[in-house]
Amino acid sequence: MHADVYAAITGEIVVALEQGVRPWMKPWDAAHAAGPVSRPLRVQGKPYGGINVVMLWASAMEQDFTAPLWMTFRQAKELGAHVRKGAKGTLVVYADKITRTEADETGQEVERQIPFMKGYRVFNVEQIEGLPAHFYATARRFENEGQRDADAERFFANTGVTIRHGGNQAFYATGPDIVQMPPFESFRDAAAYYATLAHECTHATRHPSRLDRDLGRKRWGDQGYAMEEMVAELCAAFLCADLQLTPQIRDDHAPYIAGWLKVLKDDKRAIFTAASHAQRAADWLHGLQPKEQPEEKAAA
Image 1 (cartoon, helix red, strand yellow):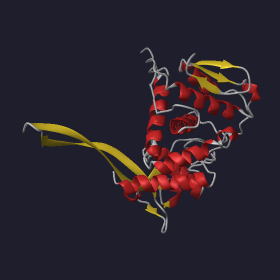
Image 2 (tube, one colour):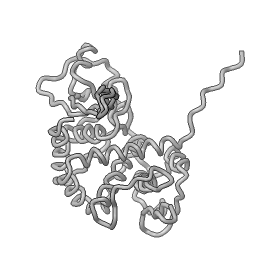
Image 3 (tube, one colour):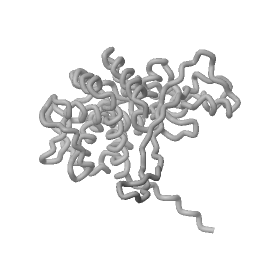
Image 4 (spheres, helix red, strand yellow):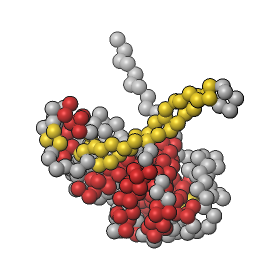
């Protein structure tokens, strides 16, 4: 992938953070029928992953989009629609590998896998005119009443992570391998509780018995610490979107922004690494959920 694409995406995120905005914490809106909270979706309804989630959330926040659906210029044209004149596309990336046959030092031909990335631009459906009606469908708005969420309760119970409640701090302790949470009633609403729990459960995935993630953290506040916190924030945002939760930004995480900015300015690939680890953690936690059983066929 061209270095200028890494720099362009990192630059956009740095600008947002310097303004006090976290691109992965979208101010969710329940206006679209595709869901009150959603990962960004391709035209077929398949969710984006990794760094593309962050970029599309940031673009939606900047341009005040409520629809989570995105497509290319060509896809819009194939649906008989057209991108509105002057609309600004959003950069996303595609990763793959190519196989190349080369001669090794002995002259033998060997196949080598070469990873690559390329960037392309997509448009939100709110930038496109003439699409079928369901792309613009709206949904009823629901208020968060602060009650426990049954789906979220099941999700975190199925992770197998030991969760204890008490005190006024939320943290993950590696030694005893436990997540410590304040009581549910001490949070301002249910979404804030589950967002915090998602953050701490993400930290738990770095345990050697799980993903064994090591980002070089040696002490509180160092670069490895900042990277791990960025992974946990991103993964928590991904999980909240998947669980259709609408958390607000945690005030106690504001001090981390300075550390994130230093990491991003020092390494233009850092946000890609963090997003990749966050996606891997989210996928791992989703993988612990029971598979849906097909419905039994009715007796003839």
